[in-house]
Length: 210
Image (cartoon, rainbow, N blue to C red; front, side, top):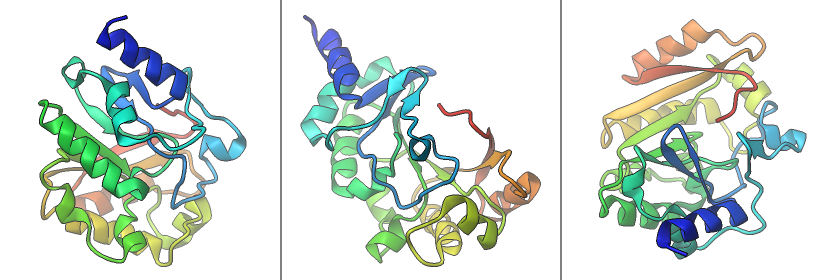
């Protein structure tokens, strides 16, 4: 069995790495800072485009790197599973750094609450190993954010925006996303918040995952 076959086998058997849209997505934790009402895992759905992303345990760094294999096969390596990648910040930084040394382009999909969780600005740590960040905003005001995302930290809606501002000091490519279809969420208003923060905006569709 060659290296690429081994990586594919590891990814499929342990649900660590999966391929969509020419990218490799890394699923490093199922833990999250949010309990989003629309997240499939809270409806006991762990399948994303045919990949079952429920982890039996959180994989070690070397296991994740083996699951990814040769990063040159992909347009991007994306930290994105059914959990918040920054909750394993040390592992994320180590993996991203090692893959960057192999020429990979790295994107982080996040809820933007890492600074609130760690009670310090972690964005300088991302500067040399993360090329792009996608941040889930999902609402245009704090009341709706609390309703739909059910965060585990205080003042989360403000914290997400503060994270975006901080990240912009170190990373140019930042995209804010919101889900079209969540009750009462004003997508143009979300887009304006993104613009005011100096970020790009991407509209997602409710119940379309992956």
